[in-house]
Amino acid sequence: MRKKQNQSLNIPIGSHLLVKHFGYTHHGIYAGKGRVIHYSGFAHFFRKHPIEITKLEKFSHHKPLHIRTYKNPKFKGRAVVRRMRLRMNENHYHLIMNNCEHLCSWAITGIEDSPQVEKMMRRLTTIGYISSLMSYMNGVFITVATASFALVLYIKKKLKDKAKMEGPVHLFLKRMNKK
Image (cartoon, rainbow, N blue to C red):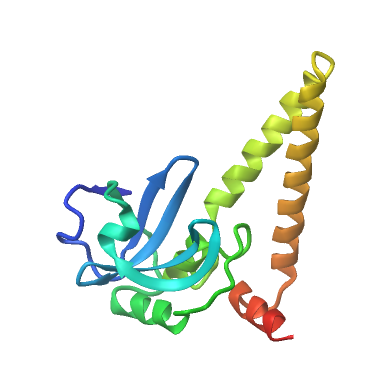
């Protein structure tokens, strides 16, 4: 992963951009001319918003940009941007199954993937185990352990549901919203 100091200088079109925030990383695809296509999700004061195109400065909040590289991308450059534009205005954001990282991964590899979600699940599992071991010390740990395990079970269920789906998640969610 490369780090970019001067925001839009020399960023190749179709690049998978990352901006690190406290507790999560936001993802988008560079569309050229200082613009980024991304799933804004809950970026607008916890109100759900669709996939949008925005200025690089607004996307990054003036934080350093990073570029995720792929060994064998299925799509590159303008083809990645075209794939992102196909889903413009889609409003099926789901933190675990269809987030900004899933979208960018899909645009480049054809596969919806979010290592960030998997990492969160592993952390929650660890917190749950540690809290349950320490539960005899304080009743608060029982609450934390229960909440952590409940979140892990929810994430695992959603990931299993996703694995059972035929086709990409965004198409499944689109069909569900039409019903």
